[in-house]
Image (tube, rainbow, N blue to C red; front, side, top):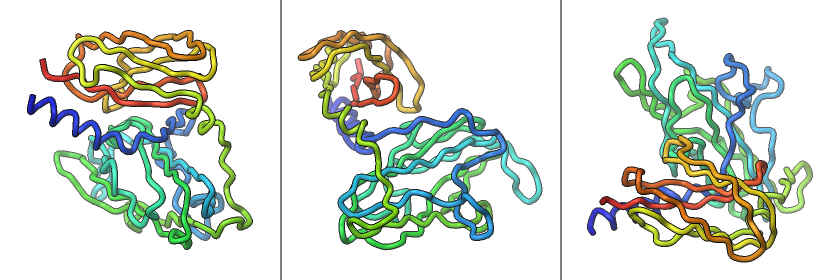
Length: 268
């Protein structure tokens, strides 16, 4: 029981950043490690192009192509991963904003793509220009290096995050489709935690075909099912009897928008 309770509270804490999600850009050339690049005054198209405003919902995405090696003292060293904490790793991020990663555990493996979405609704106390940095741990060649990027050495430039007063010009207007989508569904599962099967309950205001995806905490897709959802309460049985104990993320999607929640498989 103690292990089960610890698992449950770990799930609650780790899931706090899953309010929004991003999708890695698989079309980025291999030569592009991060997009957009940090702002450099002599390089066009760099920096965060989006501007936030008080009392307006905002989001912006950073895309990554993690290489398979990193240069250390003019020598290419095999890279293992670049990781960051699931909260508190974006330095100088205003209090009204948060972030989440894909993969969900914010550990980006070598030779893979990923992304970070920053989102929230600003308050008056957030106004100003914030010079964002990301605290990461780079694992390569059997050693680990903690850096705050951009650092002027490994990565040059600045990620200036502008939060302007309410009603200012040039505010980024975010399409509210995802908020409307989330408002159409409530998604829970019971029991949770569970040991064998759990009922996924989807209370929907609309009908249609949707996809249910279950992922582990590193973003690996474990199951994908097509669902015919009708207006009202929909219940689907999920069999997790073959899954190891742990935290899993399940997502309902129409192919463009999604809503997620967590399920916990207990120690058997």
